[in-house]
Image 1 (cartoon, helix red, strand yellow):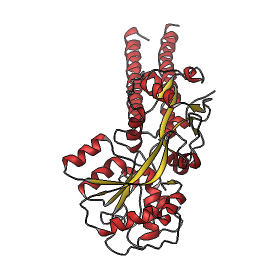
Image 2 (image 1 turned 90 degrees about the horizontal axis):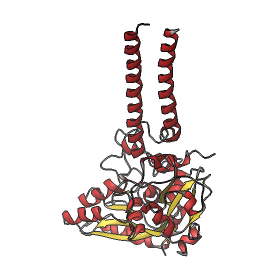
Image 3 (image 1 turned 30 degrees about the vertical axis):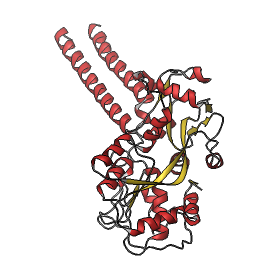
Image 4 (image 1 turned 45 degrees about the vertical axis):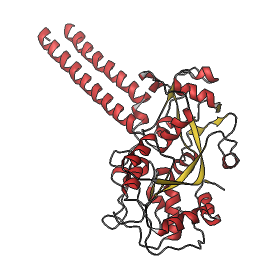
Length: 328
Length: 47
């Protein structure tokens, strides 16, 4: 009898730990398990779908009047803008200018790509991309505006960067598709992130804790978010907020055109949905420009030719066809 | 089962379970910091 009780007590301890870990798994770990590449690192975009001059790539084709054959500017950029600058290379650059270490494309390493150092296409994403443009290893960077830290890095190195707006994009907030909230005001979102609202029922939603999620410091969306917050400071949240109903932010095309996850939905802001029409008319309240960025002292004359082309009707059509909104 | 044996087994089980739980938490914290927030929100539980 005594032994039976002892065995049962041990089994009870095991059951309690199992139940606790299963709960954590359901609430948290399960939602993280599919977010990694084979190398268990963050993979933000499947670059393999946007390789220039490759059969089956999803890049738009236009009949471009501009063709570059030599002194090709090296293009790099943010994850969300890979389709744009890859399409520029696809339509304007000669075949063979995009090269890979080992000869063929592979995405089984950090950020997933093995572009050779002499390739005209690179993918370093925003944080490393800003360093690359300042350090001179990239000629044109396609990105959102710089963070304060990135501006300071350029100043420290004595480098002047030129920012040319080439397209428009909506900065969007999104929630799970089952969240009953479809619309928030700009003020409500600022107050959510400032910690003034901590439950969805305070903004017309369900009785669930709000989990406001931010991004990596220096990323394009985080820099835009900090600008969006204005005088509001991002508040601290309880550790348990991670079990609540989340709100996150991104750029419209990254969500809608690249990730295409139907289980999340973009919110209207002040009653305006982030559609292409509402971005173009600027009736959506948070429209951001994205830029082609280059060093003022870069002597490659093709940079200016390429920038002029991007701002021409042809270039703007290409930007539209990749899913973004033209700037003019 | 002698009391001493029982206690050794009990504390061993608690130790192993606690170590596995800590490992689970360490993984979850690391993964949370590196995950895509779109997938994280997409997999949220709603009844």
